[in-house]
Image (cartoon, rainbow, N blue to C red; front, side, top):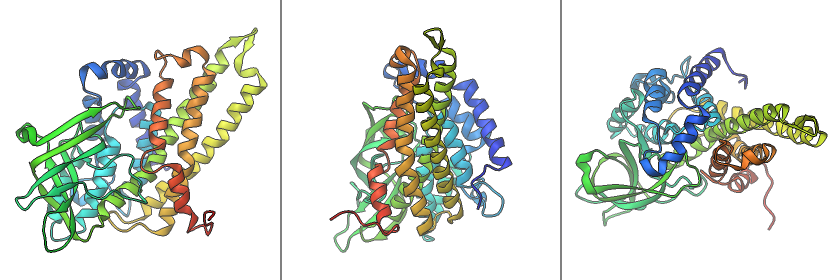
Length: 399
C-alpha cells in the first residue's frame, strides 16, 4: 500500500480542479453565498451535473457491474473519491458529492448485500452512477459513527413512511431520500432502509425545510414524512442498522480528505498573501513571527495529508458494502481526530493573517472557516474519534 498519488488520481484531480476553477471561482462562490438566502437554491445544479455526468465522480464508489467505476482490480475506489473531496474542499464547492456519492451510496452498497432486496439498491445505485439522480441519507450530519442514531421514522404496514429527521445534508438537492425506519409490527422489533422519491407527485407527504446553517455552502434541513410512499431497500431484525454505521464511518474517513483540501487552500492562499502584503516597508511574510506560524501550520497540514491518505487507502482495501476491518476503523479515527482541528486552525490563521480584509464577507476566508468548523463537528467530533482509539491503542481513558 502506498500513500502517494497515482497518475490516474492526478489526472482526476486536474480535471476536477480545472472545472472548479471555471465554474466555482472565489468570486462566483461569494456571489452564490450572498444570494442563497434569497434564491433558496444553495447547491449549484449545473456544476454538479458537470461533475457527476461529464467527469463521472458520482460513480466512483459504485461497482462497474452497476454502472459505476469501482473495481477491486484496476478501477476507482475510495482513493479517487478522496482526491475529489480534496478538490471540493479546496473550492468549498456547493455540490452534494459527500451526501450523495459517499453517504447515500455507501448505505445502498451495504444494503445491496441483502440478496432478498438487493435489486432495489442496485437499481438506485445505477441511477446515481449515471448521474440521473441524487440521493441523501436521512440521518443527522452530526451523528457519530460510534453511537449511530436509532431510526426516528416508522414504516407502516401500508408501506408508507412517517416521521421527522433533523440536520440532514443534501436533502434540498436529493431526488431520493434514504430513510432508516422502525418497522411497525407487534411481533418483534426490526429496522429497515427505505427509499422515498421527492418528486412533485409526493406533494405534502415529503417536506424539506431548510434551517439556518453555519456553513453557507452546505446547508442542512429538516425532513418530514407524512405517510410518504416508500420502497424497502433493506430490512433486518433487531435495532441495529448496519447500513447507517457503514455510511457514517466510511463517510467520516473520506471527510478527512475534504478537511485536508480546506486546510491546503487556506495555507497556500495565506502564504501568497503575506508575500505581497507590505507593512513597515517590507513584506508581512518576512517577519519572523509570521514565518513561524506558517511553518508550524505547514507541518500540521503535512500530517493531515498523511492521515487522510492512510484512511482513504485503508477504505479502498475494504470490500465495498462489506464490514470494515480494524485497521481501517483505526485509520478513520486517527484521520478525523487530527484533520478536523488542522482545518479549523488553518482557516483561523487564514482569517487572522489576511488582516482587515480577512474579517469581511468580501473575502472568501469566512466560507472556509465555516466549512472547517462545520466539518469538525460532523460525523463525530474529534473527541468521539479519540475515544474510539482508546481500545485499539490500549490507552484507556482516565477513570
